[in-house]
Length: 253
Image (cartoon, rainbow, N blue to C red):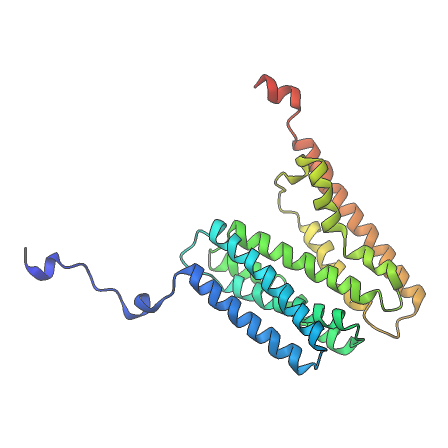
C-alpha cells in the first residue's frame, strides 16, 4: 500500500467550510436579531419598545437554540428553519409596535401578510429537502401561536375591541389545560382541517387590523373564527381522549 493510499480522502472545499448545524443556526439567529433591530429602528419605535421587542426575540431564540440542539438530527439547518426564523423576526417587530402602543395598521398588515405568506413555505421546504424534524414542527407551531397572540393584542385596539384577544389565546389555554390533564400532551395525527382553521385564524386577525372595519362586522369575524377554533380544538381533545390508555389497563400491564 502506498503512502497516498493510506491517507484519508481530502474533504471538498465546500464541505470544509460548512459550519456544523448548531453553529449555523446560531449564526442565522444572530442575523435575525440584527435584521429585526434594523427594522424596528427604521420604524422609529420608542427605545423601550424596541428594546423590549429585541429582548423578547433573544429569549425566544435562546429557547429555540436549546430545542435545535436537542431535537434536530440532520446534518444541515435547512431552508425551512431559516424561513421560520424570518417569521419569528416579523413577530418580534409586531411586538415592538404593540409595546409602543402605536397604531400602524398599514405596517402591521404588510408585515403580517408577509409572515402569513411564509407560513406553510417552511413545511414545504422541510419536506422537499427531507429535513423534517421534531424541532422544526415545534418551532413552526410556536411561532404561529406567538404570531396569533401578538396580532390579537394589536387587534384589541381596533373595531373588535378586547373580544379580538379570544383569537390569540386558544393554543396557550390548551397548553395550560395540559398541565392539569397530561393526556392532552399526546401526539396528534396530521389533520388538514386543523391547518385550514389555523390559516383562517391568522387571516381573520389580519382583517381585524383594518381600522375602518365596522364594529358589527369585526365582532362577526371574531365570533365565526372563535367557533371554528373551538371546534378544531374539540376534535383534537376527543382524539386524544380516545387514544388515552386507561389507568387501570396501564397498571395491569
